[in-house]
Amino acid sequence: MDMETVSQILMGHQQPSWDIFNATSAAAGPLRFLAALDQNDGSLVLPLLILLPFFVVSLFRHYTNSAVVLTYNDDPASIRLFNQRTGKEQSENLIDYILKKCPSLSDPARGATFKPSIWMTSGHLQTAYAAYRDFNSIYKIPYERELLSTPDGGTVSVDWAPSVKTMPADDTPTLVLLHGLTGGSHESYIRALVETMTKDHGYRCVVFNARACANTELTSAQLYCGSWTDDLRMVVKHIRKTLPESKLMSVGFSLGANILMNYMGEEGDQCEFLGAMSVGNPFDLMGTCLAIERGWLGSKIYSPAMGGNLRRIFMKHTKWFENSDIVDVDLVLRGKSIRDFDDAVTRRVFKYRTVHEYYRMASSSQRILDIKRPFLCLNALDDPIAVSECLPRDEVKNNPFGLLATTARGGHLGWFEGFFSQRRWCTKPLAEFCIALFEADRRSVSRTPSNKPKIVADVSTTENKKNQQDGNSGNPESHIVRNVKTLEHMDQGGATTMPLRNKMGAEQHTQKASHSQPHVDRQAIERRDKKNSLAIRSFSRKSFWATLLPLIVYYIMKRR
Image (cartoon, one colour):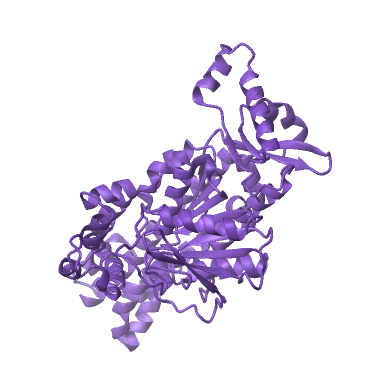
């Protein structure tokens, strides 16, 4: 078709002829199809005009998948393991060890990509499916419930899988799980991981249900919030008392992840957990709230839905607040959003002056730097609730124990893959990370039966590093030697036998040549992932308009 013919058609002086679209035209395929369809029944053209571009983009997103992008410290801690072949200890870089043991995070050929369901490539669809799909017939987990009383008269529950009667107290590793806002052990994301860890790997799982959640009766005038870690601390002590020989790890989802990261930061190197995993963590509650309220879906659907869930729990237990001088029940009922509920209840019960003060103080991003155990943060960049702009990238980069893994898609606690979308991709990297740390603890040099975590911090301070580099400390290895003596003394006392060390350590340098693992070019992986992510986004936009514009041209020409 020449430009003169196009001009005549657009001016209405000539009717379009479908023969003018030859085989070399990029628009020939879809236009010929629509022309044939329009000759029979033109009523289907407009719906196809609307749906076809989205289908094409979904197809691109599905087949181009979503590579895992990693963020971590350039000078990570190292882990000390026992080599059975040589009979000696060896020091290994923590990140290299995790990437070697977790192919779902490091090896694209073995799962380090998330390929969303072809009909669910949007973060909103992933989130909605996770919230409303019935998974009862898929994940059947028999729990044994135990009720615990808090010092203030409150009640929390812990659900054991398998039950303590079925699996008596022994040294079987235990994973402690924390649910999201108003959730519980019944949530599909909880049961999916519990099924994997218990049935596939033989571990024990304990789900911590917060006050008034998962049919736990409220017995005091206090719910729970993102900054309240005392209940978790009590539960961990109870689990430790029940399972004195078991090693513990923990995973939190959404608000539960925020609580877990706050707890890890508060406990520091005294934490009972070997490590932790944070999934769909909002990190910055103030920023998350503002980001949700900016968009139409967030302000009209997500925020009212979360606020409504909180109000339903509140309404079941209004007897504790009816005569309260702190909470106005009528104000709670008039609220619509999650911010309204937090302003009417949460910040008043937990004695914050404003809801913004609560959001700022409860944000776990400010405690990331204080965590002294290996931790993995897993988030989707298209998460409409735990928004990507609130991710603590700088904090993770400055913590030698941290690893942040992001995927371009996945929604909020979604990551559904496969055509029927019954399985979550996220359970694979979570299980691998958990097993890797349990295995590292098992391979450590164990001189005592202590149940304390063997993975502890021994990272030189910035000042010590500078002194070593400048040669101002006399013997450049003196600081490291003192640390080694201290750790040996701690080993004899039963506190720890598996220290994590900074890569500057003398032992790291002396043993690196003889015990080095296959090198992982992490910077090359980051560059590749960033390049692929940008290319995929650009290609998706181009494919959308390349599909939509010819259809618009057809529609205009036909109507004229």
